[in-house]
Image (cartoon, rainbow over all chains, first blue to last red; front, side, top):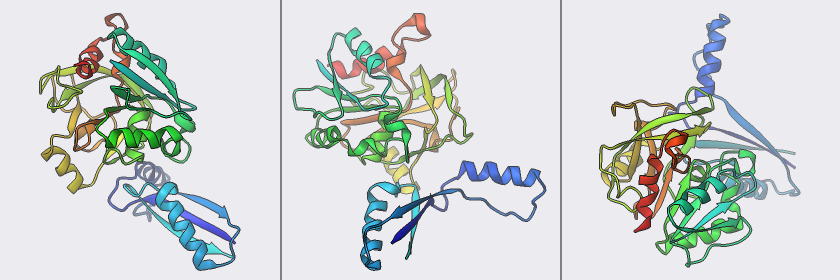
Length: 80
Length: 222
């Protein structure tokens, strides 16, 4: 089983990289872009067959290490 | 006074820190991250650098080092801890200090001398300085953009936990990295854990640009 974790800055926390990329897209005349947020993706290969258990375990990993919950949110997607 | 300076793989300011405290007459031990600290120290310094290559987030891996368990214990019992630069990042990641340090707003690594204003001296660290004093201290960081939510920020100011803010030579606000309220350094509510992005240990000799770090670090002496 595989877990795909996406970590990104919380809404309201200024994302300087996103802002810079937004600016660059604007200068390339991609005018339809309203906002850009940049995150990171962490892909975990898990030795676990129970989806609920896997999600629970990965949540703990996010809280303890993968995300800094002071400034970041995370989402977890389990892929079989 | 006995000072312990933590050393992780990737730490690079431990010998500058050792030099600074030796200059002030302290006994200094460098403590490898697999060892532990004990109550025999008067101050533990989490030195700057790039612990674990800043992988994942600055300070995120170091917080799980064996030595950090003993530092948490030491701090809980009232022991004094100072985190400089990457040390500050490690202390926020460990939740020994509030807030977090994000990528600099302009996305650049900033390395230069910067002026700082003393916001509070009612603590062991800055007691040799006056509120409003301006010091000239080097900064060298990529992730120094201090963030805390609005409630947390209010609490910091209300409790006198904001130690230093970035300013220009006249004391006017000058914010190099986007930190909320230009905050350069904070302490915990109990005022025994301190963290700052600037490097007082690099400002110990006039010949090298500034010796304003002496007045700062001297605060811990007595």
